[in-house]
Length: 282
Image 1 (cartoon, rainbow, N blue to C red):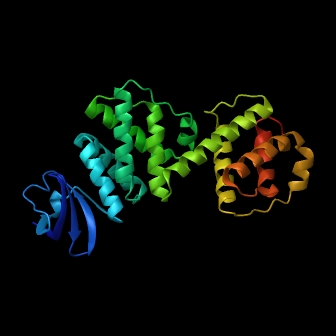
Image 2: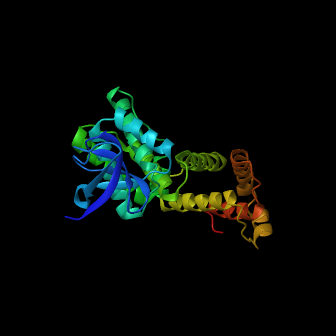
């Protein structure tokens, strides 16, 4: 049986331990059924690879302590389900930031508490999340099914969006608050466009998907201070005056949110997309 040499640093419970990998010289959290049984802290232990269902590296003492708190305050079934979702995500998306083991487990545990208390989980950005992060959304949908199947709790469609944002943030190594902020801003920009055109955009239409993807790309370029050339800018400003009035409000919104200057070249391309929503030939 293939075994690895560890020093057991902390026993969370019979299924989760913190250990020092003596081969790779790094601290890791190991998960596996009964993996901690019979082990003693500060002692060496040979652990078979087959018994290790999941292993992830800890960055620092804070992360270890945070995970310890989660383990002590969360139902073991919730931890197990969270790890199943993370494992599925890493198989499809690649390695995720290790903090997902803390953040997603804590989030799902809290969501279950809210539903059990009779509080409805709503997500006003569900359509945008589905468009922007389709792979994460699909994995999160399966995660909600697993939760319902194992715990007989339906967290609802809104929670699919929140789990998808956690997965996306871990995939891109960004704070989930930044993912939520970007999604909220996109939603509010769409509202500005709807008010300006006096229309209600059908969120299942292709045009809406194209608009959201363009706006997301524009926001990323603006935040990263990447500039693009727009040789048609003067013509756009002249011919699409109504759309450019809407753009000015969007410009102010982005500048207020990110405290950054938005260049007119980027705004010109936005105006073209807004004009398309009017159904006019450009």
